[in-house]
Length: 109
Length: 118
Image (cartoon, rainbow over all chains, first blue to last red; front, side):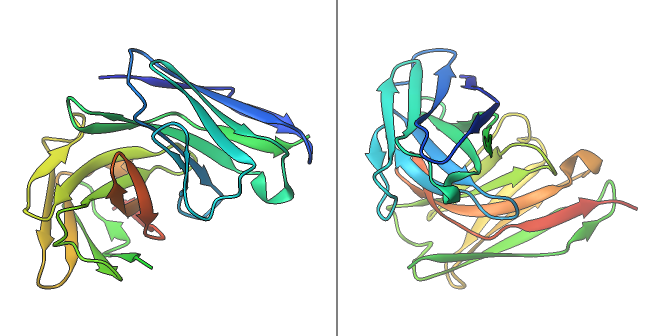
């Protein structure tokens, strides 16, 4: 199975900062990559699908890029509501299975 | 707007069977456009995909849980279900149901905590 490795595991940032989170796949995985935001006690929210497509209703300060083995989630200007944990999720089209990264917690510096 | 709601016991004894149901409103489990998944999250840890069920009842499970998991769909009630047999403390988690949109999960239930303890 493809393994997904997120980095960093924790990120300290300030409001207004540009934030970048990386997700690496153990083997090439096309663009079947999604990003989610999760706040404590809440269900995850889909931000980005198919690597770079912004989900409806998500602010445009969120963007995704990459393909193959390296993917990036960028928050162009961090807002107070953005302090949360972010997960990448890969879909393996061959085994039809889903794998989540281990998560990146964005905390206040 | 699609809404999903998990229901089931919050406490299960070790070696017994965990059973949860997800009720869907604002959408149909009969749709051949979507699959329906279960995901869990142990306390303080990350997300773990358990498996999915389609409108026809076809399933796909994560390899690590495959021997203990069964999922089914009830189109008459617009629900889908999860059963995990022979549970241990490591099955303690918040369990989420979610709808697939292509290769991602676009609508999630609020989650339900299941604790395995005697």
